[in-house]
Length: 177
Image (cartoon, rainbow, N blue to C red; front, top):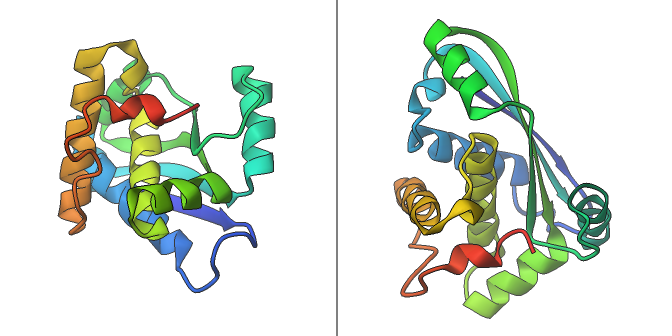
């Protein structure tokens, strides 16, 4: 079972149900990953999603990644993939997958640049962040980037959303600036 806790800063449009969006994106990403069993198991997998300001994302990026700039999404995994495998095999228990943080300004600007709704882009970024929490990493090579993109495509399609990478191979490189 996937449990999503969301915290929403005032810079995010209050007309959107961001916690529900985060939960749907998280469930879809997990369901299409190699850890799909977590979606319906007796394991409680918890995720924290924070919708915050670009300034906070910049501070976190500087503190934890030594990059003094804002970015669209940051992921802070709490477990290694091998630990997930072990817990998944046990079939019961609780685990904290980690935290995901999205910056309002960058997310809105990227959505506008792509001509899509901010909700669609935020859904994609949460799904992307979830995959990082599950041990996927597009920065380790082309094969890993393509695998991650395919999972994101399937997860978003399951939510009735368009392909986030239309005719733009390697778009993954734009995440985690």
